[in-house]
Amino acid sequence: MKRIIQILLLVALSVAVSCSRRVESSYDSLQFVDELVTDSLPGLQRIAKLAGDRSGVIALIGEPRHCLAISEKLLNVDDYDNVDAREVHDGLPDFSGETVVSILDYANAPYDSCLISDEGKLMLREMAVRNSLAALDSACRCKLLVICSPQMAEYGGDDISDFFERIGCDVPVIYSTDSAFSYTTACYKLMREKDLFTHNISYPAARLLMTVPDDIFPPFMTVPFEDLKVPATFADTVGVIAPNTYVSHVQNKR
Image (cartoon, rainbow, N blue to C red; front, side):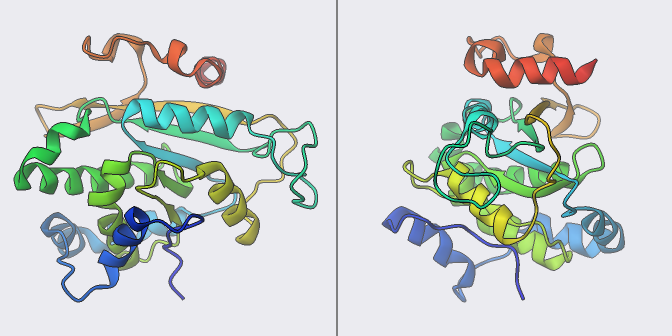
C-alpha cells in the first residue's frame, strides 16, 4: 500500500490541482530522478530502509522563512491531549519528545525567481528532490518529510513522492499549496495514525541544517547551520524569525 501521501485537510482548488498531477497519465517523471534510480538504486534503497523509524526526526525542507515558521509552530503548538488525542489543551506541546530538523535552502531561495521560466521550474523540481535526499541522509534520517514552501510543493511534491516510491521509501510526505493549510494538524494526525511518535518525555527539540553553493559538486550541498554562512541578502536572522527554534538548536549543539 502506498504510504507516500499528501494530507489534504482543506478542500481547495490549489491543493486539488497539486495532488492530482501525480496520478495523471500525463505526469512526466523528472530526468534527475530517472538518473538517480538508474545509477544508484541499491545505495538509495539502503538509505530508504534506515529512514521512517519512530526514532527519526520530522524534517522540514523549503525556503528558510517557511521552514522556520513551521518549526516554531511544531515546537509550541498545544491543540491536543497527548494521551488520548482529544482536541483540548493539556499544557504540554503536542510534539513533545520529537526533534524537528529544518533544512534551510539558502542556496536556492527565493523560489519566486524560478517561476519566470520553464527552465527555472524544472530546476525547482530538481531542488526539491535534492533536498528530500538530504532529509534521508544519516545526518537527518527523517520519519516524516514536510515541504514547507508552496512553490516547492507545487512543482516538486509529486517528484519527491515519485522518487520515494521508486526507491522503496516509506517516509510520508506532507505538502500543500494552500496558504490556510495546517501543517501542525496534518503532522499530528498522521503521526498518531502511523504510530510515529517517539513517546519520549521531553520538550520538542530543533536542529538546523542549511544549503550552500558548492563549486566542487554543484549545484549545492547541505551543511550544519552557521550564522556566518547565511547570505547577506537575508536581512533577518534566524534568531529573530524563529527564536525558539534558534535557542533549541544552539542548546543541542553543545
